Every structure is written in structure tokens, then in C-alpha cells.
Amino acid sequence: PFVQHWNGWDGKPINPREQQDAVEFLQMLFGRMEEKMPSFKSLFEGTFQYHFKSCDSNIAYENDTFDNFTMLSLEVKGMNCIEDSFRMFVEPEVFNDYKVDDFNGFSGKIDVEKYSMIKKAPEILIIQLKRFEYNLSTCQREKLNSKYMFDYEIDLAPIMIDKEEPVIYELFGIQMHSGFATGGHYFSYIKYPNS
Image (spheres, rainbow, N blue to C red):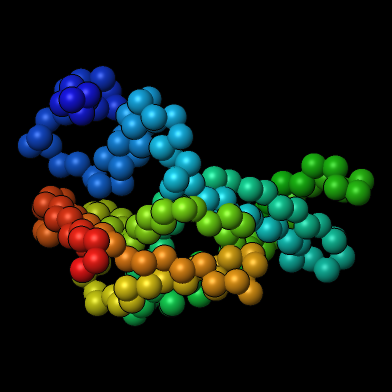
């Protein structure tokens, strides 16, 4: 019953004719469910580990930070399958002018590589495929409609810190978008138990 009385982020009633993003809706759902059941979100929560390492061999800077997540966002542009997206996920990103404060007497800006991995996998995994992007040439939002493959079972081991143990998830739901980046409809397909 409390779902019927939801308001949007701005406190105003939700307009069903207004374009809504599925990820924003999910975040709003988590927020509302947590109000009623505080442990709800923990079922979907995992932990990222970000490892920062200096690109300069003369500076032995390394640092780890951690961040909780409820959704694993994966790149799909130029990817054919989830394994491609996993490989891209663990590829290091280079950050120029990364600020370091008092590391072994050194303070200043350096270039670092950032490695992303999953330290703790969630009990229930939600994957967001990044199908929408902003085109800087046209200054418009666009939808990627390329073919992308994944199996009914997904093993997260390739992007876990501990790669030795399989972390298997069984696919039981898909949300699909029909339309363009500027509008459309979402459809959900859910696998029934024992089907």
C-alpha cells in the first residue's frame, strides 16, 4: 500500500506520463524499501576495491579504497558479450594529476593507474548494461542497440579479487527498453521457479 503514495525525488507526486529512468526508479525503490525493511538493501550490496598505483617507478605510491554498490554497471559499447565487459571492467584507468597527501614524505600530484575489482559479491546481483550515452558531437543522448550476449549463468570470478573460487549467479530476470534514448517503455521478463 505505501507504494501507491510515493513521491518523486523532489517530493511531488510521480507523473506516469513523464519519462523515468529504470536505474533512478530502482534507487528510489531501494530507498523506500529500506524505510520499511532496513535489511532489504543488504541483499543487493557488494563491495568494490579500487587499487591506485603510481605510473612513475620513482614514486612507490599504492593505495586501496573501498565502496559499496547495489548495481554492477558494465560498458556495452564495442562489446559483444558479458565476458568482454568483464575484461574492460578490470582494465586499469589512468588518472593524471592525482593528488597525494603526505605519502612517505611526498605530497603533490602524480599520474596513477586505478584498478577496479570486486572484494565482496552481493547475495543478489543486479547488472546494468550501459545502453545510453551522450554524444558530444551531436550534443544528444543516444541508445546503443548492438547485439550483446550473456548466459543463463554468470560467474563473477574474473572480476573478483579472489579469482580462485567461482561466484555463480543464475539469471532470473531481465528488464528491456523499447524505444529511443529520449523515450520508450520498459518491459520485465522474470523466470518462474522451476522453469
